[in-house]
Length: 240
Image (cartoon, rainbow, N blue to C red; front, top):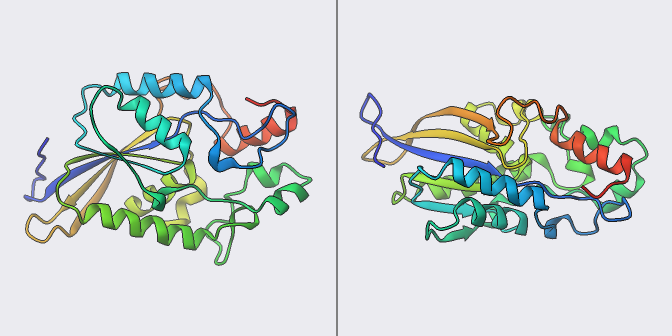
């Protein structure tokens, strides 16, 4: 679908998704050894299917997913039956913490609020990835996608932390807004990016919708933030 802004700019649209529900807690109630490989839970697959049905009228002409299995699986379910190739792009993989740091954690508040210092220079996620370095990686990947003029409506399926970075870019707030944005599982955000029709340079960015969940529009189903949910599962020793 071709869109034109009032000033004649070309208006491109990004539907930014978080992957569906997963469990980072194993059957013994411990954090899984490899968080990059976890699949969707049955509820996560249902979330993605419901989201795909709700957006079946959207004419996506390009789809990109983080290369982690949970994002790929979510993208496949949301776009099922559309015949769209899903590109796997490692620029959009999630933050990785340090396993030794996590093993030493005694206060689960450190897990529940791992993002609180994201804007502090030099801060790292759970002793692992640098917030500043991941932000640079994500924005570089996003700029490369925007530099390709062939698409109009993009489905980008990533992660809670990565989505916060993209939204920070859209708001022009960078890491300053990172800790104030939540992303529920299988939510989507709608970002319009206006570009100059001759140079393809970005003129403006507008967030049209944020953290929309088709399975719980009013956010009544779970009052916990996404990282609070992980900490709760660890405290209660349950896998999902």
